[in-house]
Length: 172
Image 1 (cartoon, one colour):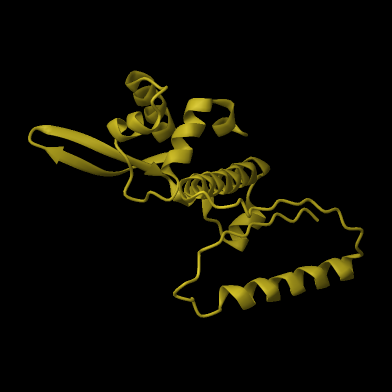
Image 2 (cartoon, rainbow, N blue to C red; image 1 turned 90 degrees about the vertical axis):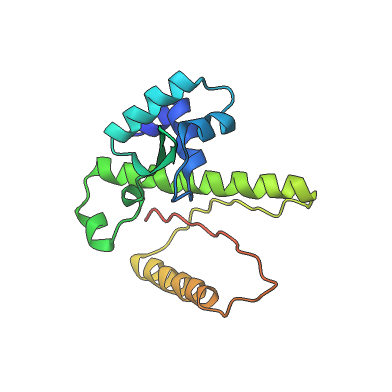
């Protein structure tokens, strides 16, 4: 199942739209967001994604005799403990990493759309650095980085503050 989400553009787009929407969206709501995808195609892919455990039914909207299922990402697929990570297979780890990057992509999309709306300057940054470190200096680097992240994570939230997403992937 490696990279299954990236192999199909429709499934990837569905998943992107559902990130951080715990209450889920109906096929009709997804159809409004993904105008280029027919309703029949959405039904087919959503059903397949439910079967593959990528999506779950988060609820049901009832309007008279009509029932509309609400679909959400199966968030258990991208929440993993240290112990689960260590015992996970390569394929399971790839699935988790796929969700991680998908979340980052959606976060950037949301940021970009809000930036375009208020016509502010793009302040996002990306970098890739390869460091030549001994095991000891690598462990020290990770410890210092962790301390820095915790310092800002545990700061009292400022009323005028803005939520910012910082993501890192370390490949030792």
